[in-house]
Length: 282
Image 1 (cartoon, rainbow, N blue to C red):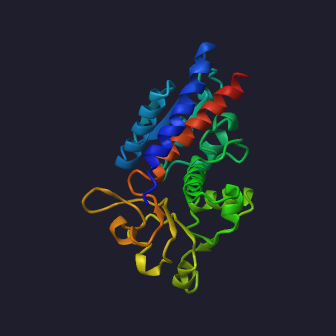
Image 2 (cartoon, helix red, strand yellow; image 1 turned 180 degrees about the vertical axis):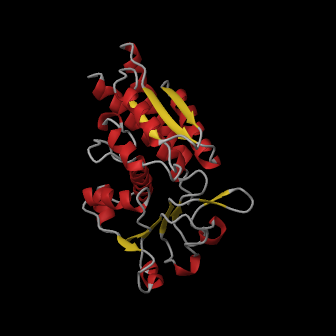
């Protein structure tokens, strides 16, 4: 069964619109500022989506565009101004950035209370990506009609995670730790990964390479979530598996596009509203 991320996200947007409505009654408009460097097609598309979805729920999203020649110092000065602007509630620095930019310095410069992407060490917000994976797993749990709590259901499953990158698998591992869930990690050094995959009840792939997951290595009835994405020769987005290959093996799976991505944006907007509420004491 396909897990439609767009449908899951739309449910969340309904709740977010209600929260924005309460803020606007107090003359408060949630405001996110996105710093975009260069014209990376994937980044431009993703930022445009964030802007559109933010405006749909009644928030304001400003995109600050910079040429790839911009310096770390220039961006740091802008972030400092945004930190003290009371009408800016969220700051997001779109990745990837050019090699000359000191990403760590930008992260540490950003006010933790406005770092809705959750990269600052003291940010009170969880990264949207693992929150999105969590929401999708909650939806899967609801579909199974298992007579336990979702947390108990997850703890009973053999979960395998592919990839441990700082913007993918790494944050997902940290998210699961809070739920006392310990997934088995597969990376380039893992011995006999196919044997591990064959035993998995849930596979979360955060690699970003086509055909990382193939049907012959999966157990019948597995739940598949593709976090990783890549752009094929046809310019279309692909996940870490091909839907036609796995759809008869998996009991539930996310498609690409339309899987984790839409829920990820919705969880970012959820963080924005939480930040706005905290900063305005609503």
